[in-house]
Amino acid sequence: MNRRDALKSLAAATVLVPVASGGAWAAKEPFTVLNPVHAGDDPTKIEVHEFFHYGCPHCRDFDPLVSAWKAKLPADVVFRAVPAIWNNEQLAALARLYYAAEVTGELPKLQPAIFAAVQDQKRPLFNAEQVGEWVQGKVADPAKFIDTYKSFSLSSMVSRADQLTRAMKIQGVPTMVVGGKYVTSASLTGSHEATLKVADELIARVRSERG
Image 1 (cartoon, one colour):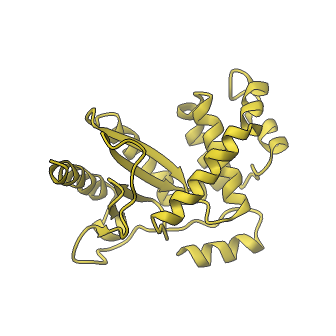
Image 2 (cartoon, helix red, strand yellow):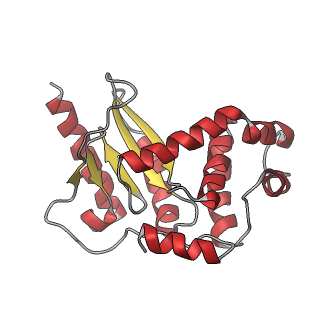
């Protein structure tokens, strides 16, 4: 399902409808080139962005694969997961939950649980009250977690995620962007595993282009 259809469905439902990007080969090349190229935060690093959202079953399948992959990245590569928002309130709320988990160090524990809560349990996690009830017994300090969730700094992170999604012209998830230039996904490579292999090749390409 593409972005437009997903957001139409969101307007009529209380749970998220996934945006899918898996499928057969859809292009001759397993990547596209972003124009204009997006400048990274650190010119000394090769940035890899993975766009996802918690309502997407393909993102859920991809998550353990990309987690293992990013743990082996070389020192000159920085990985950044970015929750896709598309100016949607529910996706923005889930993005805030993601960043609260990341900032508090609870993300490794909570990531599978959030996917399960959204997709299997159809649980709404769209405000502080709902999240506060859900994190009880799941994090070391629920009060601290909710304080982080409500913080202004998280609002800035959510806004930045939305800006990145727009700047990199993301229309489906999961999608990876390497070096702010090369865009790849399972719809182009044929599988999640192939996507990570292509990402490795694109990292090498960016490194070579930078000399």
